[in-house]
Every structure is written in C-alpha cells, then in structure tokens.
Image (cartoon, rainbow, N blue to C red; front, top):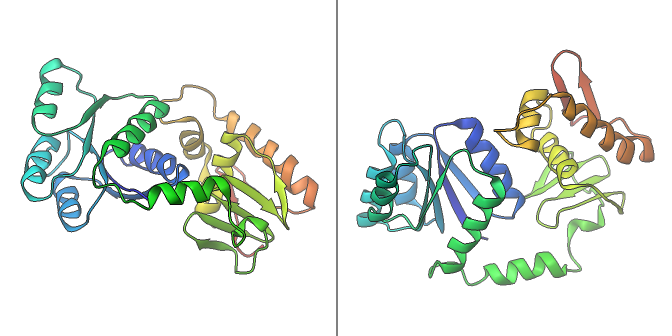
Length: 255
C-alpha cells in the first residue's frame, strides 16, 4: 500500500482529498503547515507528497527544497497560483508535477497513479496487494459477518450491526448479502461510518460526497440518505442512519 502525505492548510480540502485517497486504497497522513509537513516527511518514508505552496510556517517551495537535500520524495504541488513562473519555480525545486486549484478529483487521482507508477522506490508488494483487492481471497471480511463491536474493525473496514463496509474491495455486505451502491452512496455511507457517533452536517456530507467546489443545494444529501435507507434500512428492517433535526445525520455505534 503506497503511503501519501498531504501538506495542505485548508483542512476541509485536505480531508476531502484524504477520503478520496483512502477510498482508492492508499495510506494517508496529513499536515496543516509547512514545518509540520517537513518534519513528517523527514521522519517517515512516504511514496508521494501532495504539497500546497502557500503554507503557514514554511512555504511549500522551501519545504520542497529542504526535502531534496534531506529526504527526496516525489512531490505534486497543489496551489491556486497558476502563473508560469510559479510552475517553473516548483518544477525547478524538484516537484514532479503541478496541479492548480480548484481541480477535479479524478485528475488528481490520475496524476497520483502516474507518479506512483514512475516512482522507483514504490513498494514491490503494492502490485500484489492490488491484485488481491481485485481478485479476492478466501479469508476476506467481505462475507459480511460482523464478529466485532460496531466501529472500525481493521484498516478500511467498518462494521455496524451485521453490516460490513470494505473500502479496499469497495463492497458493502449485510449479514453476508452484497448491497449494490453507487459511488456516491458508498462514499456517503463510508463517511458516516468513519465518523460514527459524530453528527455530520449536510454541508460537511455534501463536501465529502460531491467535492469541496460543488455548487448546489444541500438537499442532495437527503436524497442519498434516502437511497441508502431504501437499500439497507427498509430491506433489513434496521434504523441505521439517524436524522438530527436542524443539523444533519449520524450513525450510532450502540445500535
């Protein structure tokens, strides 16, 4: 599993990108200022860094320059600055790519895949892990049998009652039965499960499911919750997603 570090002071954007990367099966860490990001990058061996330029503490270009000396790591710059000289400065400092905000998450993920493919230090077992994710294995949790308490059972696997969500396989089972969800329904459910017992506002859920630059009504969240309830609550006679009036939605662990 490739390890990616996000150094971004816009916490909502960092969380959004983190969720998308986790959804793709990567291991993700975050830092919200340049100095913290530099320390983390020097302490751990990351396969890729997503680095904002305009950071508090230490700007991204200086972080990049120092890393080229202490611990060179493939780096994609994320920034709202799109002047040619800014791009040239970043590439000259050692960045392997450059993407301007706001960006489509699909484009960022594509650039991440290319960067990791071309990274000579990528772990050799990643291909085997990916093959396992696609091909499956007999000891997988995808049977949907929830044997532990509600919550996070292992990396990328969330359990509630008899429901099991497996991020790596992009599958959801209830008591062994596969539940077919769209990508946004899956992301909505994963967001609620990964924040179990925390009431999430419609704005927060909208950002996670539709993107930080989405322009539209928050009632789209209600639509996806209704879809999830029709596929899970109504079918298996449970009350999984709770409505908190005037705030948003939550999944309670004690159910």
